[in-house]
Each structure stands twice: as C-alpha cells, then as structure tokens.
Length: 511
Image (spheres, rainbow, N blue to C red):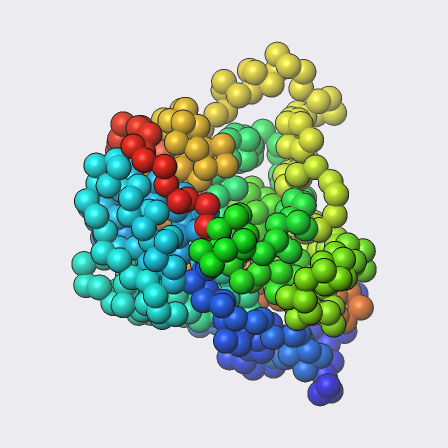
C-alpha cells in the first residue's frame, strides 16, 4: 500500500491534496463488467488497499466548469424518441410506463437476452404501439442502439458497472440520457459524466425515483414554503432485506425466477464495504437541504458493522451447490453502514444502508428544521413546533401542501404503478420537461454527487472512519444555482394516455 501524505489536519477531517483527474480512478475498479438486467456477465474485482488509497487523489483540485447544466433548458423535443437498454424487471417496467405518456415513441430495445427483448416487444404490440428495433445477443449490442441517428433519449436500466460507460456514450452520440441508480461507482466515473454533460450540453439524469414519492414531494413543498424554518438536518436510508434475492440464482438459461442475472448484485456486495447504494434515501433529503443549489456537501465519515449474515449464507449454500465456491473467500460488506455528512453551511445528513439483515423496509426520510420536522417511517409524521400533528391536522396539511404535480398525475400514477406510482411520476415529469424545453429536476451534478457517497464511504470505512472531503461537482456554481421548481410553474402539458391492460401475458420479470 502506498504512503498517503497528510497535508492538513482539521478538527473534523483529514483532507488530502492530489490530482483530480485520477481521483478514485481505481477506488472501486470496474473490470470486465456485468451488464444489465442481465446483459453481460462479469466478476467485479475485489477491493484492495491500493485501490482505496487512490480515492484521495485530486480531492482538492477545483473543477473548472465549462457550462453550467444546473437550470439548463435544452431545446424542446415535441416527440421524444426513446431507446431502452436493459429489459429486466426495471427495464420492462419502464417500457410499460413510458407507453402511457403522450409524445413518447419507444423506438429501440436492447438486452443480451432475446427473451427479454421479446417480452417488451410483445407488450408494445399488445397495447397498440409500433414494434421497436431490436438489439440483443451481443455483449455490446447497446452501442449499436446508441449510435442510431433518430433517438433523443437513452434510458439505461442495467447492472451498475455499465451505467457510466453507457451514459457517456449516449451523450457523446448526441442523446440525452436517463440512468438507473447509482449512475457512477467511482469518483472518476462521476467526473466523466459531469465533464461529458457540460461538453455536449446533453442532460444526464439519474433516475432517483424516491424524489417523486408522494410524502417526499409533500414535505419538500412544505420545506420550500418555510413551514419547517431553516432546514438543519436530514436522514435517509435504504433498509431492504435482499439477502435471499442476492443469493438466488436463475433456475433456467433464460435467467428468470426473479434473480439478478449471473449474480451481479451479489458480486457488488462481496467486493465492496461501505454504503454501496446510497441514493434512495439521500436524494429527497438533499433536495430539502438544497444541496448543489445553495449548499454543498463538505465532509463525510462512515462506519460499517461486521458481516453477520452474508458469509453464513454463502457457506450454507456452498454446502450443497459448488457454484457458490466463487464467493468462498469473499469479504462481504458489513450489514449496516452509517455515513455522516457535514455541509458547507454547517448542516448534517445521516444516510444508512442495510440490505442483508432482518428489518421492515425503511428509507427513514427525516427532515428537521428550526420550526418543525417530518419523518416517514414507520408511519408518516409531521411536527410544526413541538407536537406531532394529529389525524385531522395531517389531512389539513395534505390538502394545503400537496404539490401540483401530485394533483395532476398522482392518481393516474397509482393506476400505472411502479413503486406505488412514484416511478411513473418521475418518467412523466422527465418527458414533460424534455417536450417543453425545461430544466430537469435532477441534473448531472446531483447524480454524480449522490452516487459518490458509495466510494467515499468505502474509503472512510477502510481508514478507521476518518473524514474525507466530498468533491464539488458543480465547480462552485452551487452558490448561485437555483432550486428546481416543484409546483409545475411551467410545463405540465403532457397528457397521460388511456391506461389499458396488455392483451397477452408478458415475460416481464427477468432481471
């Protein structure tokens, strides 16, 4: 392990100077990767001390912003032609949701597996949509899709290791891109996204659907209207027991049975130790705290428990199935990771991750201000002052502060589905912004920052929870960037088409 030179010691952190270009270039090195929803198989290389040491490279070098993508309104696209890459559970669901939005043409579909493409193609036909062009059977078939001249938006729903590569390629080929979470696995990848988006002036949005959940939008609207005073602290999490699913292997060569193709997600958990999936709880909290739009993350410190469930599960399965021998010497991540972030304005954020121990699902979603607070799990609570609102007061607050976007498409979103409707609200809003030439709610700086918490937490865990500086992906423009609108002050013109059931049973559950 190379020697790390400590330049500055503060009360809160150890901050290192280095060269930004190589910052975290190998921190979570992505070797021959795994593609999406089962597109490509690969093994994620094991984290090493030298990899982690590389995270300190370039922490202090400032990014010179070539063009500010925050608040940027690209030319309007009346008909948004979409190509979808990755057609597992999430990708096939996206095809279905997008088919209900006026002004969308799903013109290309891609997955390694023909069965996955066939499922989404059959769905489109069953609801009266034209057949899309098909790309499958080749690990890099997605490149052919991205190079098509008549596409406006590339919608990426693949295993994490391919997200940045595909998003960068899409922008370089003149397309806007929306990509599932996390949009980057390393800091170097995050910088690639930022620099490419600024260079091409193409939107690069991470599909953080939890920012569009009903309670999160309600409380964001209340926060924006000053109901909680000055927001000083937020908490978010991804607590979801995926132990059985991560270890579940497909039961046939079609990669079905609700399994992660080629166990790609298990490999992420077997080679990294930190908060490897931070954005679901973090995104809505960052919006409430106006991160990248008036404040920025400054320092992060992270701690993980030991692993008490994944290694025992591996041993149990290996006793009867030699396929799991690959994971015999794995150092699985700790069950629970807790990361603490301090902002430039002296506010704090706590974000947790736990997908391998028994607990009811939770994203916490706690936002605390000087005059009130909210907390979503286990039940929705709002306090204005020192008392929690009773049932009557909660109803009053919902009636008064439910934002226009929920009033406009909330009930329709529940019918379409997708995590209770928030997925559809996200898709509808994104398409509406593109069709009306409006800035997107989430820009490349948000996706890069929220995703960067994973590698930063890995470094901190490996270095006895020392603090590390969080890069400023906005190049200083956070000081003047304006918060995104949430009440449809403009736009909102896109219609929702008639919701009808497909005429045939689809193969929609391949991962």
